Length: 212
Image (cartoon, rainbow, N blue to C red; front, side, top):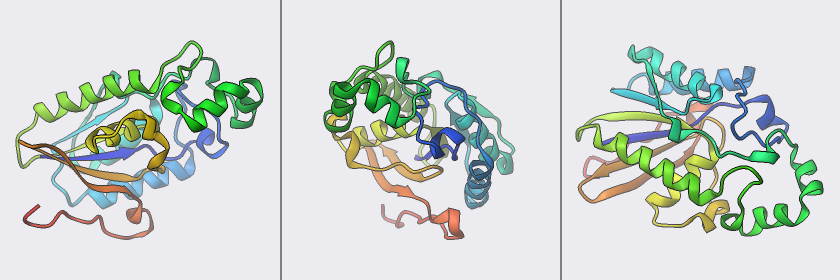
């Protein structure tokens, strides 16, 4: 089966570089346009299910993507964004000023950080991986599903597919409304496409080769 893993569209807090976490921030105007472009690009692909984080920015993106297929969105709590605890709602520069040592650790050794009153990357990785495994087990070979989540969750899922730990968190990007394509079969997960945004400027989504 094929899993199209998508980051939600842009929000005001993305644009202003504010730690979002579990705050239920809606898409902004650009984010809605990104989601619409993503939905249009995926409209020719036979998608059998759409899964999403329950947070508004992901759910809204998922509903736009699901619309051309006549599907609802199945909300999965374990796909929710990392709980930033005391950092939620802080602009990046304020977090740097208020928590200088922890901020430096977040930039250099992110796998060692547990947000005050929140989660660590490893905790998020475990719940997100469990969610992805449940989704994969629920679908037959030949099916394609869309999964909409957040930058942190997506990065951790992709690192797992690549056999890497959360210490490599900063080694890959996940931009708003990017697409990742993951193949799942008897041998496990294989990454086909990473952080692709060509569909936002009118390009076509690359297809796996016939013998993939």
